Figure 1 (cartoon, one colour):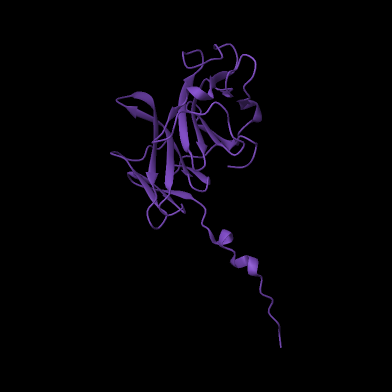
Figure 2 (cartoon, helix red, strand yellow; figure 1 turned 90 degrees about the horizontal axis):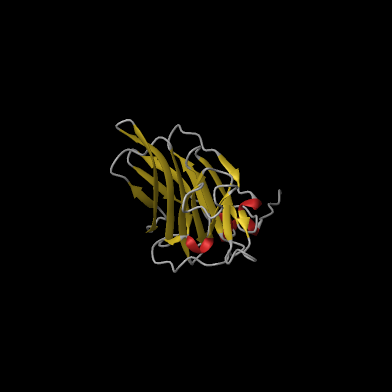
Length: 211
């Protein structure tokens, strides 16, 4: 008689947890695989056009996943074709990214050089990017999320326009009920940077880990 070897680890709850994913309806983005009842951080950047004028539209908010682990971001218009969407499960720290139907997702690993530890002239940790503009989000599991928009050479750029675009962590604004932005990054903090001109996504942990 054939003997069957059972592998208990295959039934481990951690192996059965769904990973977040984003799908699209005509006028909404839907995140699934979230922790039921947990907060979810939404972050999107889109390039939209109205009467021949192009604009960059940033969307961000905190929702609560339903009993099935789903969250829905409804719009009053069709989902923009050139748009990047990110959803982060604030309870587990897991995240997912997607683009609208037919638009390619251009994602790169977050360069370690984009994170500057505080010290010397820097009173707090800072984030920098080799882009002309950046839409940024920092998420700390079970704590909150903070966002920021910056353009090279503008008042939001502490780099002065002569090098990499840079801003201090404590300049970021809070989403939802989160407290003021922390002066230091935790190793597990999730950083999400989007180049709104080239529509490139960079995502990673402060310690270099995967998102």
